[in-house]
Amino acid sequence: MAEAETKEKQVKPILPFLHVPENPDEKPYLAGNKCTSCGATYLGARMACSKCFSTEPMEEVKLSDKGELHVFSIVHQSAPGIPTPYVAAIVDLPEGVSVRCNIEGVEPDPKNLEFGMAVEMYTETVHTDSDGTETIAFKFRPAK
Amino acid sequence: MRDVVMVGAGMIKFGRYPEKGVQELAAQAALLAMQDAGVTMKDIELLASGNLYQASATVGQRILKEIGQTGIPVINVANACATGSTAYREAYMAVASGAYDVAMAVGSEQMGKMGLLGGGGASTGTISPEGIVGSGLMPAVFGQAGVEHMRNHGTTAEQFAKIAVKNHKHSMHNPYSQYQVEMSLEDVMNARTVAWPNTLYMCCPTGDGAAAAILMSTEKAKQYTSEPVKVLTSTLTSDPYTERDLTMPDVNTLTKNASKLAYEDAGVGADDLDLVELHDCFATAEMLHYENLGLCDEGEAGKLIDDKETYVGGKIPVNASGGLLSKGHPLGATGVANIIEIYWHIKGQAGNRQVEGAKTGLAHVIGLGSACTIHILQK
Image: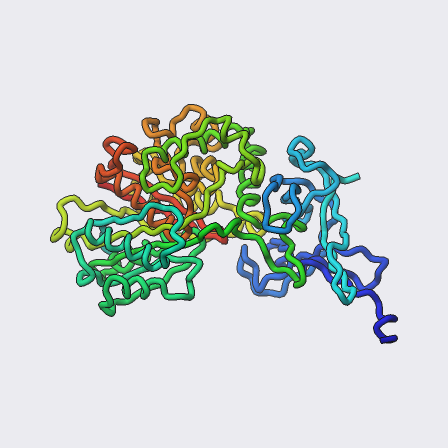
């Protein structure tokens, strides 16, 4: 239908804490929630603070797209249909939040990865539905 | 709370039993445990049944339909990899509370070759984040946990591999182990990598299995045995808040907290232990738990395995059974089986793998999500 053809491309994040701004000029970002009582910060939403149990509403914070590599594994065997090998990592962000992610842009070999190395987030389309809706995911790569 | 003793154990060889129902495997173990204790279904006052993959299918009641429907209360338990040990704790609590004198715990699982566990996560639909946004699969999770130990303490991939060499060697003397294959360090290190630094032989296999235990009050046990084994503590914890726990399950703080509580409750320390069965779902995990359970100082775990102190015959034998790496890890059965291994050593019934003179032993299990159980048994 003509209406559908003029409709803007739909983009949805792979996980709910990846926020996609309505303005296409703004980059998607990871959203955290910060406890207003103790400062503990969570990736995504929590009903209450798991650290201090405060039930006050949390403050949404835009998390940095730069972090450092905490640890990793090189996955050579995964669930059926998932391409291997890849770097499955834990990245620490300056807000005190850690993120589970893939590290791209390096050959998946331990010798290419250093503890504490600077990494940066980027997003890319990882799936397109039959109706054209794109799923975007966040990934990290060595910081330029 | 009153003292609780263990008076009977039963286990089937872990393996693959596609032709049987899981309740049959569990019933076999239950009959063996009752025979060992010298009781029948008429004496059992409560059944706690641990099974994860059929958690909604009343496995406990199905066991009783195989061996005796006496109308007793049945508790079906699911608690990740700590399912069996949590069922054991339910039986323990039933007796310790004074409400029941005789309780049975049965752990069972039929996994077949179900493949890797974990993964998934809160996707927004359409596609799974697994492999795109890191990995929630157990090999990667425990790979990362091992790599964190490398980062903190300079541990090497070879040291992790040595743990697998030890457990596979121990398995040669355990007829209940699914795999009994001795391997060299080269065999382990040259096997294909599943999730670095864990190679194939550093990952526990899936499998089917069942194990059962009979618990009684000290007073009641006098009717059946002059040598009951005391259950000094049955400790269960969940994961406390730590900064990375929600992203990277913090199995270290989880186990450290549980072991502190367990040692306090039991009135013994790590130095008093003659053997330990701990949750070696991956070789990397065993390394971490040497320190988490206080078997050595922080950062000394690599040296402990280098010096072969955790072999049978060493200072503190760990996983004399061959561990999950050799036995397999039928989730619901694992926790009860670990406790039974300690029980057999204390009773002097562990055959060629017997830790001579074993009086006190600890069984540790973690389930990701997370749960930790520690049981300490004593002669």
